[in-house]
Image (cartoon, rainbow, N blue to C red; front, side, top):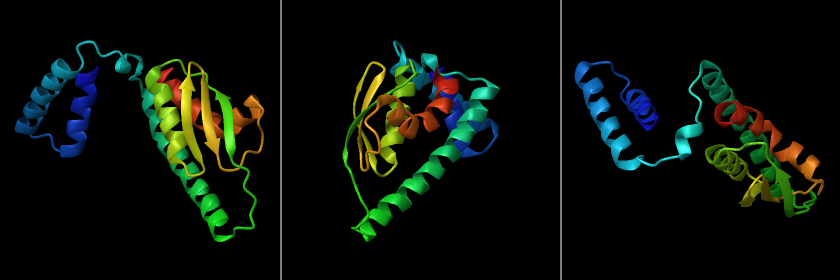
Amino acid sequence: MIFVLSYLTWLALNWSVETDILITGAGISVVIGLLFCRNCTVLQTVRLTPKSFAYAIAYVFVFLWDLLKSNIDVAGRVLSPSLPINPGIVEVKTKLNSNIGKMLLANSITLTPGTLTVDIREDRMYIHWIDVSSTDIEEATKSIVKKFEKYLEVMYG
């Protein structure tokens, strides 16, 4: 698995199908696979299917759209201090089972302004939110997690 991902990364970065590039990339990918992932369990849940690739591409656009909306929201709060903020930590629940899926979800939440993943415990995440609209787990999950989770669930389970 690590060989395939590192080789695809090599090909994407070089953007060439010349023989020396292909052979060098294969060699480097084998070395990376042998050195760094003998007992690597993190990438075992990655699904390499056409559907997961399509969802990965869609996920990038969903993330970028949410990133743009969050930036505008936080910039508005900074430029207009009269806008209300209600900061706090909320508990949300995730359906993701894989560690890599949870990590990507936590990072996606943290990278969008106004939210910060504070802790992850089993199927629960604790998120610092700039404007807590609800402390109900289901409502907070729907507002923060669901938009990312539906794509990550297909890719990582």
